[in-house]
Image 1: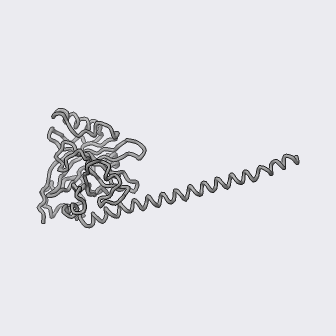
Image 2: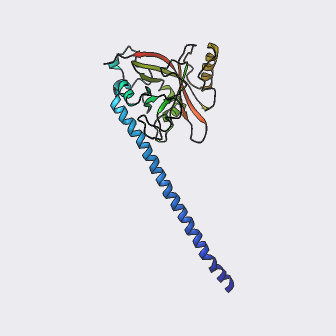
Image 3: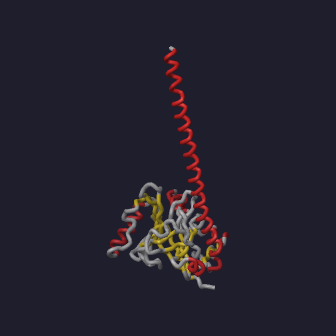
Amino acid sequence: MTEKKVKYRKKRPAAKFVMISLLFVFLATGIYSAFQIIDIMKDYKVGEDEYNEIARDAVIINPEKNKNNNESSPNANNETEEEAAFSVDYDALYAINKEYIGWIYIPDTKINYPMVRAKNNDKYLHRSFKGQYAGCGTIFMDYRNNKDYTDSHTVIYGHLMKNHTMFYDVRRFEKKDYYDSHRYIYIYVDGGYYVYKTFSFFQTTATSEVYTFKFDGVDKFNDYCAMLQKKSKFGKDVTLSFDSKVITLSTCVDASSDKRWVLHAVQTEFVPVPKN
């Protein structure tokens, strides 16, 4: 019995050391994680503050007119620009960034941002509109597209941020009620704005045929549009034709896979806006 007690006492310092070591590891991990969270929150704030400032300086929103523009076009009732819900100072934004190509806006969402197009698709992944580092990046058009929105298919990318900014709201179109109440997308350019109506939403991968930019003939494009509608549970009320201009809003499903949410819309009109 005595020998067993001696042996037990000899083991206690080792066990105590293990416990202290584990406690230290857990404490160090917690501190490291806390600093990471702080860094992430600071990064979020950098991007959010910049885009809020840009919107405040370059965008005018009419709240009363904005109420109904998520379900119907702002020009559907022949409203004048002064009556429209939204206006953007193109020249002011172009002065800040020469790669600016328009402002994307979906009423009753947080999608309300300037867009750019660079010589590649990497430049603005973690670069803000004003050129500083930002994890949220900038909403950007695929470099293979024409910046005047004349392509049959134009792809626009944005991050799905955990603070519900950038293209986070794209994922909400998975719900039919949300989809039905957010049918119109507006892109403001120099001289007016384009109106797009949503017709398809689904999940795909980064290498799927969704990301097709050139079509070998009218039939190929018609087949492509039919494929988009077939994969979607919603949007069967929209008729597409060989001369349709389609845009795709693309965002990640998560950070660890190549899955993508894609929202498709077709151009319905261009509303000219004379400059003051």
